[in-house]
Length: 311
Image (cartoon, rainbow, N blue to C red; front, side, top):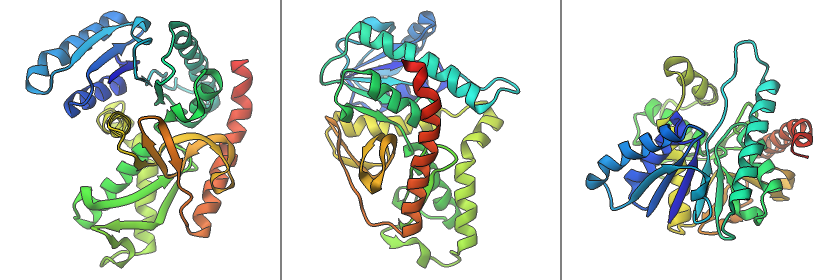
């Protein structure tokens, strides 16, 4: 499988390329960036390590790699300027993203290709991509709350001194302020989280607050998140490349799951070679369902402001 990563000169794109390289599944990784010299340099750096990792082709360049790509991952985005409003940033990122999607379309996309949107605001831009691309809706996926979910699990595991790989808890809804923690199914080692010694509602609230602010914390401390995002992207790539049919909290355009329509957000999603294979409307606590619907409503308000920009 060939994956092209657009915006691979940046922190997120380069970390995604490294994580996917280390996974050893991709046949070819193409790094695309507006700064092609940087993309080629990143590819060369990764290629130098390939003898110790996997037999892969790693190249840098431009949109000439799109036509034979099986998966296209869009990570390019802009950072907020000083004193810039959130809406202004959304508008600038939307304008950049729309141009990227137009360039992807002009280059020519395989009918079987999967597009993974990572650029923020990811749920809004996933909806925009689904509207613009001549692909079935199931083949356009947003990274959604997969990153929030692994952050969530890592913090719970650290708090309980538990194995991170045996800590299972979901974040659903928006990758943003209205994200929803799903405590009803949270477990460690298959055991209900709320049965662990010392677990209480105050601790749960604190861990979710830390999760919701963890991206901002990383940005404050080191300038931007990269490693965990790369791992989250690799999780989705592996599910698609190997047709694993994993249940992941990724974003896609909803058509009735939990009563939510005409907006992209994260619900429990079966992910395989064709992208979204199914959406699982598992039973949640009533307040969790209410939170999901509220998250959809918040995203619709932003979409109403953004959609005129793609006309």
